[in-house]
Image (tube, rainbow, N blue to C red):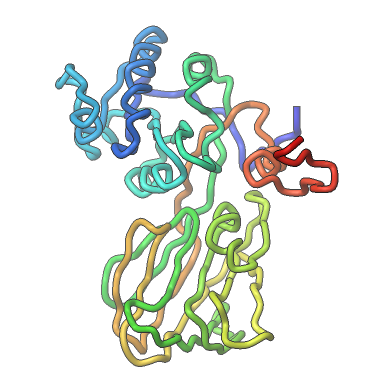
Length: 306
């Protein structure tokens, strides 16, 4: 078994033994799995509540098991997220700073945050009773602007064009020190977990989730000498939008606000984490290889015709 970083992974007893269930209502396979999950929860001594919209879409007959997200969070000791990475990110936004562990059940294409699939969820549920799992604390971002509430993100905060085809001019500061000024389509500030998302597609580095850093990645910069940079997560990142007009700030691709520029966004580490449930034998590098085929030697890979 791989050694664990005790600061990042720990066992936590599910208390109270109540499960809140969220899911992607656009995936019919989620509806089919829901009944199996609720039966297994009952067999293992768990009570449960289903997010109302999901329960209605799935045609669940037990209306007394429906609850609003707010009611679920007031009762649940753990939350299930049925879907892909987008569903997990949305569930993380709902849970927020409640410190409720989230178990992702992958029913999407990649499932980077989810180690449990439909084929083994019923075998995994008893582990929640016996403590045979770990909690991995995933760092969150917080972005603040002068007007409006803060946005929080597990993957990334993206600042880009709202509707104009014009590029944006940015000044970026780290702990009040100006580090770069450039023109681009946008800029991404990502967590280590988010380094394999949008940032990666813009040539950003892959960062181990145990690293205490953030990644600043320009989107299609209009220059060859501005590259992604890794900075400690202990200080403030400030982004000044210098271009006149409107810009968009997006959190995990889930929430977006439009700001009038010139404007300034301050990004820091959030005062809380997302608590993701992982298998005891969880390995980050195994996940990279399995989900992203990282390090795969194509010279020794079988072609589709073989």
